[in-house]
Image (cartoon, rainbow, N blue to C red; front, side, top):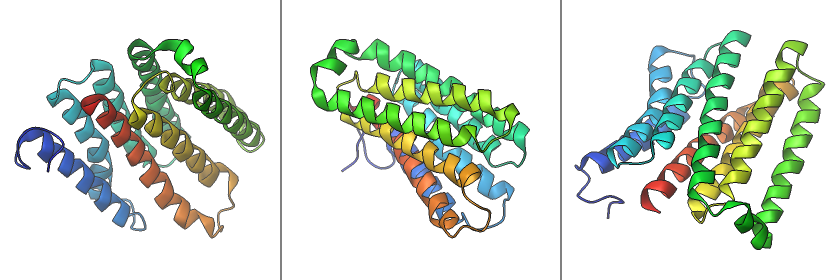
Length: 223
């Protein structure tokens, strides 16, 4: 059984399959040295989700946000603060596009306040974001403090705006995105270079990140 009309050979189903396969291949090569092939596979995982959204007539904001995430993936694979800031900028714009998409498609703040579980998740997101901001503020250099603060505010806004939707997959995707970014920031800035936790955290970051992208995409296309 396929999620979209037609068999596995249909364009949408084949695109989804190739995206999932690319994500799995990248996960299996996380411990290998950086190469053009690994970079291509990582970028393709999100880029193919953008193609899938385009093929299925998904919202333009979703297509653009996914494409920006693919660009962010490519930049994040490079070393140095410039590449990191470029990736941060790509994901920042992607999150702001998602905020516009979610708020335009959801039930507004009234839905968020009407159901206690939504408000509880929003409070948890706020507490987690403030804790990460406090921890990172004391560990990163002055040049990164403002960009990281703006980014945390943007992803928090994305998470809260997702709670105005009825699509559970999209809400789950937003939660996973925040968790993935939290782990990524911890692995990059808070852990020591020889910490034994770096290995499993790299895998967790990728799995949570791709699952987040997949959940948001499928939530809109199948919801």
